[in-house]
Length: 410
Image 1: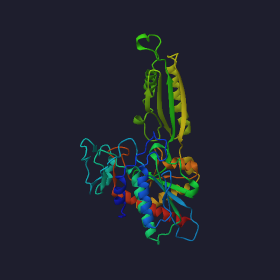
Image 2 (image 1 turned 30 degrees about the horizontal axis):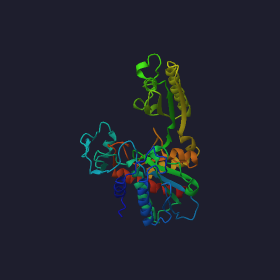
Image 3 (image 1 turned 120 degrees about the vertical axis):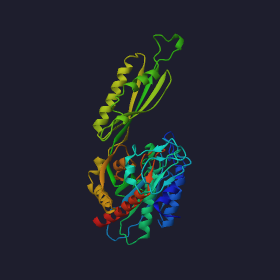
Image 4 (image 1 turned 120 degrees about the horizontal axis):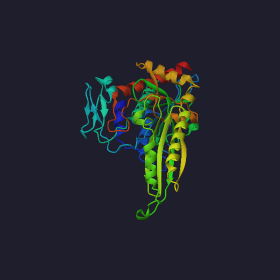
């Protein structure tokens, strides 16, 4: 068993662990357990004796404290699944060694090019080793980079008893990419006071704020009739759904917003003349912003439906997750210790917000305050996904330093 972070990463990414939003099981795909079993075997080989995979596909393990004084128990968490947005089957990782700049054309599909103009962070990677796919699959750096980094940090801590630290709990989750990563976490068994997801992007970045998120489900009941006799009678539910989509504001969409701007995003539409369903996600850093956007959507639905007197609709809002900033602000030392660990690992820390969510969003509100630490990956959920070996090594150093900071400050 090799134990460098890049060797671990290359082992893990070739295991297909895509989750499935349509599945009702936990995990949503059994193949996620394949990686979970491998991680348990590797942890036990390190001497982490309590490592195990539970029936829901979660991996739990403990790096025991090696000091006498009480130190808060912290958790390192990453997710094992990859996104269903693009295939993760038969991943063929490629390594561009000693990257010297310029665009990276992927060998398996020459139409896929990682362009510096679209990924300017490549300019910070000169001389580094870049891992990509061959262009026919996603890579899985989201979040197998985080998994590999936690595993490598665990190996260092287990092999070096002179590094003083408190108890550290390891948690690997399934189904994060379909919003269910925290569904079956047993926080009592986990027994941690504070946590960190290792699921971010650029080296040195710590994120203690996420979007708040809701889903909106709209069902349209139209009036179906034979098209040959439809004049003045038919009210086509598909057309009603299309009219609603067309009226959504163009300046409140993912493709036209950035920074702290929220958005409304249609994610699915199905239908017949008689019935159509429309799914949207709503994102904002403030709960009030979510409510405003949801009222805007329903106002559009009412305007459209008014022209179809025989039709009706239902409108349902489902809470997905909330901005973890509200929880983390109560325990500022969690984020401050992470920023200090980044400094000790030789980087200038950057504190920021995620235009998205992590398992930490929900875990924070479940009782485990949990900011996000960089894992080094970029262009997630696409065949252009990449990560550098040096950034993964920096993440490993950050986790080891973080364990030391908590012990020193206890």
